[in-house]
Every structure is written in C-alpha cells, then in structure tokens.
Image 1 (cartoon, rainbow, N blue to C red):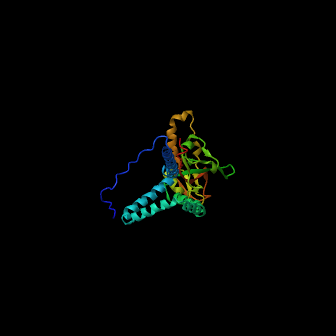
Image 2 (image 1 turned 90 degrees about the horizontal axis):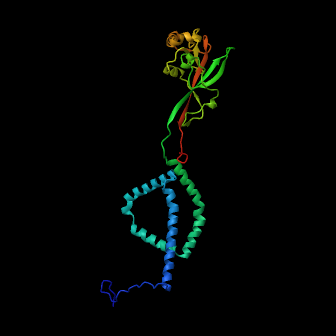
Image 3 (image 1 turned 30 degrees about the horizontal axis):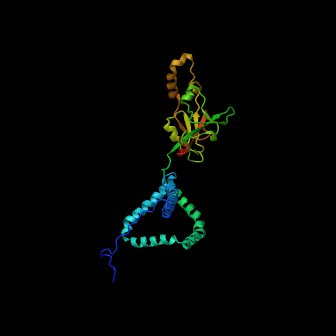
Length: 303
C-alpha cells in the first residue's frame, strides 16, 4: 500500500516539549545556543572588518572604486538577470556550502589557499591599488595662475649693469616709488621668491617673458626703451630732468600733482632699440613668469 502525501494524517502530530530546567537536555541546548551565538559574533566581526573600512569613505578613492564596480554589476544584472540560471546557481551554492563543512574539504581548501591564493594576494592588491590611483579621479585639476617677477639691474659708476634685486614692480620711470624717491622693494635671489599664500609652484623653473612689448603696453609704461630680441631688457630712456622728478621740498609740497603731470609730458614714450643704442637711464628690468596652483590641504591637516 502506497503512502499518499495528500491524504489524511495517519498519526497525530508530535508535540515537542521544552526541556526541563537544569536537565541534561537543557544544558545541551544552552551549549548549542552559545556556540551559535559565538559563530554569529565571529562572522559579524569578520564582515565588519572586511566591509566597513572599504565602504565608509575613510579611503575615499578605494570606496569610490568599490561603488563604481557595484554600480557596473547592478547595471549588468538589470540586463542579464532574466537569462541567468538562478536555480542551478543556488543548487550548486547550497551543495558547496554543505561540502565545505566536511573536514577533508576544509583541509584541501586550506592547502590550496596557502599554496596558491596567499602568494598571489599581495600582487592582486598591488594591482588594485594602482588601478584605483590611476583611474579614480576624485578632484578636478587644481586652479592655476601665472605669477610674475621683475629682475631689476642698475647701471654702476663704471658703466656696467649690476644685478640689484627681484621685485614685484617693474620700477618704471613714472612709477609711484620712483616719483616718491623710494628704493625698489624685493629680494636679491630667485630662490627667495615665494609663491602667494595658499598657492604652490606648478612649474620647476621661471621662464623669461619674451613679449616685453606686451607687458609694457598693458601697464602704459612710458619713458622706456624695449629690446624685442635678445635678453628682452626694458631700459630707462636717459632724461636730464629725471633727477628732478619726485624731488619735492616744502615749498612745492602742494604742487606734487603738477610736477607729476609735467614729468609725464616731458617723458618720451617707449621705443624699440638694440643693446648699445644711445644713452640709457640708470635702470633696466625684464619680466619672468611662472605658474602656481592652489595648495592641496588634506582633510587630516585641516583644522
């Protein structure tokens, strides 16, 4: 006589009775529960150690790369989920989990992990780190600006040009400092020129500005002679009245504006010339340029 699962029950259902307190079965159940909780706790801690540091953006580049990979996987699953044999996958996964619990299989897996996986683990991590560093771009390129410095030289009593200093101002004949009789302000060496606050050098070296006429015209500088070839010096044009410009005594204190206007009328405009042409003033200058970029401040260093 066959047994039919759809027929009426042939025996009453067994009622499972709880183990009596302080009995042997009670302590067995307590031990099994503690072992299960210990396994759960270890699994939870292992997942936290593995997942949390890689997903909490403590390492922003690594977390971003992980989320990019997960996004790509989700996009693939949205397209190919209906053609994947899920039943076969879950069947194989279930049997794999069951087989992994066998001591012989565990020993084989440990041996394979020691001989094949661990030697390649460091190489794989190095490849992943290089990929993250190369392909994951978190910030846009830093803002860049061009800074300038003027190299000033002065004519000595022997008729030779002597290096004077590097200044942020060209110290042209009609500059405020020249009219007021002040000395140029700057530093004597290239190495002492610092980038603006909050910026850092983007290039290794200074570059000579070969377009000397452009920066002279932009500043509307007059009374100078420009070299359009060679070292690109911009010379003062010799003027016998130059020493009188900016010399103000008490009797002419209220006529400063008139003196400046008169000096502007007397000063010739800029000219083009070559080295050695005519008589020149006491100063010459040329412009150097260099790129700077915004200084990167890490979050750890930020206040």
